[in-house]
Length: 296
Length: 335
Image 1 (cartoon, rainbow over the protein chains, first blue to last red):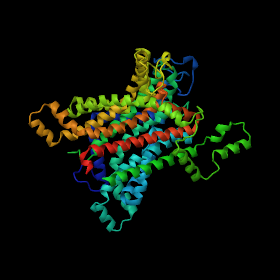
Image 2 (cartoon, rainbow over the protein chains, first blue to last red; image 1 turned 90 degrees about the vertical axis):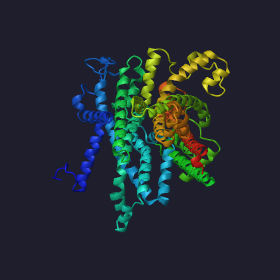
Image 3 (cartoon, rainbow over the protein chains, first blue to last red; image 1 turned 135 degrees about the vertical axis):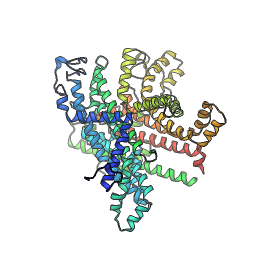
Image 4 (cartoon, each protein chain N blue to C red; image 1 turned 90 degrees about the horizontal axis):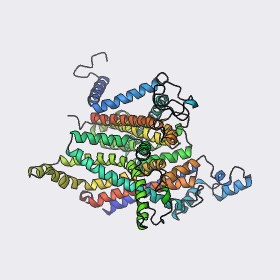
């Protein structure tokens, strides 16, 4: 690892991987739209990390004398009906958004990947069973299914995360399965099997890494819809509960005062739009950068 | 070919059974006590037990599932606690409102999205392509409920163009007899042009808001379908023959993506059912979405499971339609 990564021929798997990742990153950032997406996500993460220092006010402190004030020097994005600072609530809301996105992705990625790879590799009855289950989940619009799950579990942030995760794994599994199916007859898989590699080893060391790029792209694009679904659940009063500064529930709370105090609704919505768009841009960029058919 | 249809049908049947099992299981896991919702918190033990047995909750799960299926086969989804009516009757009342909204939305989405996609593909990697991409991206990333509220703010509160909350102006409420449940059709049948105008003014904004998502989706799909066609040799031949750009794009390439577009259209319509839940809440639209969320918040189990089930069925039906359209109209899928 101490040798330069700039040398033409990589000397080990790790170095090759590093060089590959660096090349992908360069390709990603060369596209201005993708670079914007990356920048927005970087800002989101930074704001979430340093939220208490960036926020100008306590996001939960009420000040009824300063209720529904328009944007100005004291309150950059105005105040809501309880006199809470909208900007500070937005800043702290980044933590909730990131929490949801990260948790859903961490659950959905490995789960979808495992189901898909196993299903595609073994085929037959295992495949039929897994795909039938996935079909059932896919036969509902995802928000409606998430609503039904939240109805069963009760409203709340954790339950919203669980409900979204339960509805989000089937497309990932489908994708991983398709990749695994095209690869399972490949010579290198057969030779690994002939060398006595166990199914687990073939799945983990040979199949999973090759399915990873397309799953990653799909997961990134998925993050955009997770942001939207979580906000939608919050808006319907089934996600994060007040007084948590979740963006969707902020919109829901500001709704009654919207006609006179548009900022209570405009600001959180714009934040949701920006973050969702950033994940979409990054997903698009990753798709272009990782797709071997498009690289010249 | 027959075998293919049978296999498709049986897998759809399996998915349907799974769908029923899933809604049933979700209904049973619900922490809200259905007995308590009926008898109230003050009921004594004996009343509670009686209702518990009447609802069949003392039987094994699989017996309950069997009863659930049996009731469903007779079109019985149970009664709604909220309205006191059978859920099927409630759904028959609210679904036309949603279908009216979703149908106009898909029309708007297709009328804007398809030409946008064609335009983008025929100017690949030039500015129309970038414009279409950004528009599609924005449409895809916008929280639809927020977009609806902003629309209300601008076009209703500030400009006064749109009709605001509900399906029709307050003065016209109940003035037109309900025939089809579709407000535009009913007002026209009654010959009441003022009511028709009011209904249209109320319908247009939510339909545009809902249509944004399908516009984004359709333009994106149209673009990629068209790009696949435009690189083929018959297009080059057509160009070499000296056909105008318009004839090449619309007369040759577009004709070849019609089948794909039809299937995508059916899928997009299914996606609208999802957006309708949020848009209806924003616009106070008395459709399926408002019904679902309203009964959800009150813990009205029968109503929730009934509407989730009906949406699942509609969704599956739309997917099957998309599949069937593809098989019927695409000669390559026929053999």
